[in-house]
Image (cartoon, rainbow, N blue to C red; front, side, top):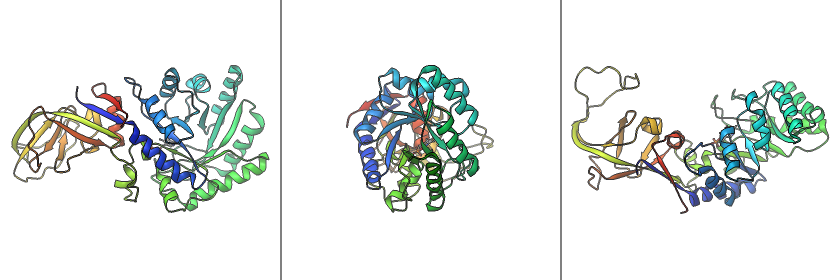
Length: 365
Ligand SMILES: *Cc1c(COP(=O)(O)O)cnc(C)c1O
């Protein structure tokens, strides 16, 4: 059945072990971020297992629903909830997650109450916003005081450590300046509470370049890595850094050709808006051989989120249910019924996982 996405588990394991080995040399532990919500197969469990074989110290996801499902499937590892929790889901947070990222005092007080009720100790990583402006306490003094308050006043919470998130909303690059601030703040919290913090968490995939060029400030001892392990794509193709040891063919998407026709490259008639209300631009490069493939924006988010394995094939566009390829320069002739293989970026990966139309298969190689 197509469209199909094959998850190559040993390639994910390879990426996890590359990242974990690189990190271990600098005394940094890696939490593997699963962040995909596949309700149709046992993805999380299989991927969590592959990441663990590669050496990650724990597993994380942004959604409680995923974490609950992982527990149902028998994942017994230490699980960290990445998105600051919603008030209504706190009973589940305490029941299913070992630890969570936090920033709001009201939420923290409610987690304390819930943990007391369930007779549990819940671990907390308090988030500090260093300028990316998504989650985390911004004011350094309030951040410090909140950390000390958790330690001293909330007996059912354990302050596991502190962390920050960069490169998400504000597109801020992790560097010596911002991450040294986090280490400084960790040291002053440690002084105030009279013990060491287990975790000083310096971000995700976008912090990995600092491990490669050895600029990560001493004291950052933990990263939460998703894309860099799952796809290994951004560091190579966007950052253009020498991360060529990461495999980018961890997920392969296949879709079937439903039409092959020679057509003009420039649409005929009055151009208005496409199916999504956008006004695209078209370039007239004459007649081309085009293949129509049965996968669309509903499955991949955007047509430029899929990259044909055969680089002589060009993706020219798409709509909800179709992808349009230019196969004029393709070495092997393609016809209706043939299957084309693509590598997804993170957007396409997440969409494929959520698309009920995409069949997901796991392969050990
Ligand atoms: C998604 C997420 C990560 C992982 O990010 P990658 O760029 O995929 O490594 C880490 N931390 C938080 C808080 C996240 O939401």
